[in-house]
Amino acid sequence: MWVNPDGGRTAKGEPCFIAGQGKDQPMKEHYVYGAGSLGYGYYHLLTRDSHKILYVRLQSTTPFACCSCFNKEATRAIDEHDDITRICYNRSVATIPDDIQAAKDAEAKARGTAKAVYNFTQNEQLVVNAIQTGVFIAHG
Image (tube, rainbow, N blue to C red; front, side):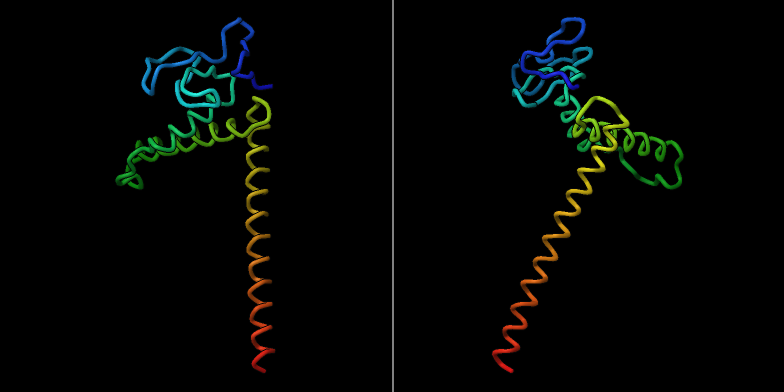
């Protein structure tokens, strides 16, 4: 299970959250600094918050893709960034800290979102068709 940042501790007894001061702080090994469920602070890598922070950070730092189709090094950098971003996203929605389960949880979330959007658009179409039928009958 993920360790709760609110009072949780690692197996070594380290706190899972250390409150911070503002947005910018120095790096701390095994921690990610950012805004999480308890506000700004250091979140241990055993918390889901740390991976949410990393995912948001990675989304805003996509490598520059100029001529990547002709440059193997640029293509590799973009592929690695995408892989790491996907892993952080999966971990940020995972029920447990396991990459295989995280991938399954991310897929389940995506399927749920897709189904909700599909159902919504189907309902929209039913309403529009009902209105069109009513107008047709009224003028017919």
